[in-house]
Length: 104
Image 1 (cartoon, rainbow, N blue to C red):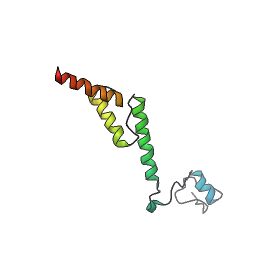
Image 2: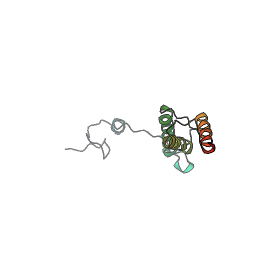
Image 3: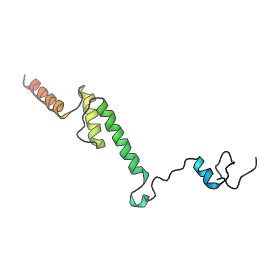
């Protein structure tokens, strides 16, 4: 196999006419470049994960207080513990019912 000086060292095919063509074939993307300033891809990944977690909770009928991970997990945990989909109204009704059970 002959090496093509137009290709990167990690190129599998080594048959590109230019170095740019070789890089484009890998579908390289530059997402963020200022990690020292806090503008790196990890912030976006956390944001996406948080919204995916929120979407999953809402699809189960759960209504978290916010899109913050701690609120989502609190709502999911509460729902699993009580067997009722979390919402502000359900939480209030559940507390009232529990209080009435203690009185009765």
